[in-house]
Image 1 (cartoon, rainbow, N blue to C red):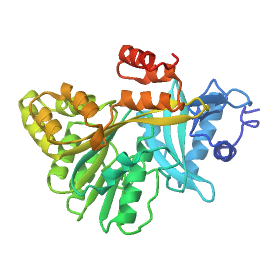
Image 2 (cartoon, rainbow, N blue to C red; image 1 turned 60 degrees about the horizontal axis):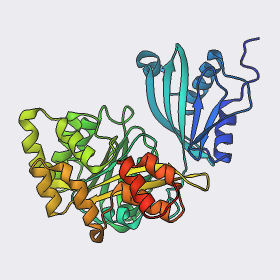
Image 3 (cartoon, rainbow, N blue to C red; image 1 turned 45 degrees about the vertical axis):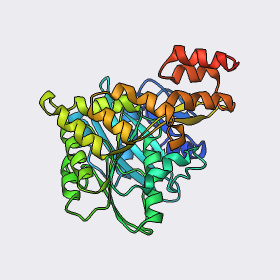
Length: 365
C-alpha cells in the first residue's frame, strides 16, 4: 500500500474549502488538511498527511495550474502562482518545502470582484480611487486583506474612468474585466521577470494607473517613486502597520546619502496611506480596521523635515478631512459592539493608552 489511497484529491479539498467559505487551505505533513475560516484554523477529520500525501497533492495542484513545472519549488523551496477551476473559484498558491517534505498554503479567491460595502471598507478608503496621480499605499501584515482592498480600488477606477490600468502582481489574484478602462494584468515569472523590470516597462505602455503588487526592495521602491513622479497614479503595498512605520520603511531602504532627497520626493508624490488589520469580531468572524492618512500640506512638510513621528497627531486632529488613526478606528469598533475591548487593546499601537481610553468611556475591558 502506498499510503495515498485514502487521501482526498486536491479537487475534493478545493471544493470543500469553497463550500465552507474558507479563506485559506493549509497542506502540511504531520497534520490533516486544514482550513482557515473567520481567522481561525480548523483541521479536517481525515488522517494526518504523510510526506507522500503532500507530494501527491502538490503534483495535482501543479497539474491544475496548466501543468506548471515544479522546478522552481524543487530548486528554490518556494513557488507562487495562481489557477482557476471553472464554476468554482480562483486559487492563489504558495508551494513550499518544510522539514524535507512539500507543502502548500492556498488562498481561495472568488471569481467575483469583492463588494467593498460587504467587506466594511469605508468610503474614505474608496475615495483614493478618484486620484489621478501620485502614490497611494495599502499597508498591513500578510493576510490582512490588502489584495482585496486593492481589487476594490482598481474595480472602482475601472468602472468610473476611461484609463489604461496596468497591474503587476505575484501572482494575479482577482481578474478584472475591461469596463470603462482597459486593464492589462501581468504576473511575475509567467509574464515578466521582476517587479522592477515590469514597472520600468509599464512607463512605456501608456499607463494612467499602475498597480504594483508589492514594493519589496530598494530598486522597486525607487522605480515606484519615479513612476509616481511622472504623473501616473501608482498604487502599491508594504508589509508595515501604520503611516509612520510605512514612511520610515521607505526612507530607510535608501542609502543615507539619498535619504533627504527621497524625503523631498516622497513628500511631493505621496497621496495617502491606508493601513489595515483584520480583527476578530464578537460575532465570530473578522473585520478590517483601518488607519487612513491623506497627505495634506502639514504631513508633506513633516515628511520633508524628518518629523514623520509627528504625523499620527496630525491624523488624529484631521478627522474632518477623512483621516483616522488605527486606535481611534478600533475604539469606534468597540463602541459599536463590533469587537471586544480586549481585541482593541491587542491590535492597538499603544496598548496602555487604549486601555485608559476604553476605561474612560466606560467600556468593559
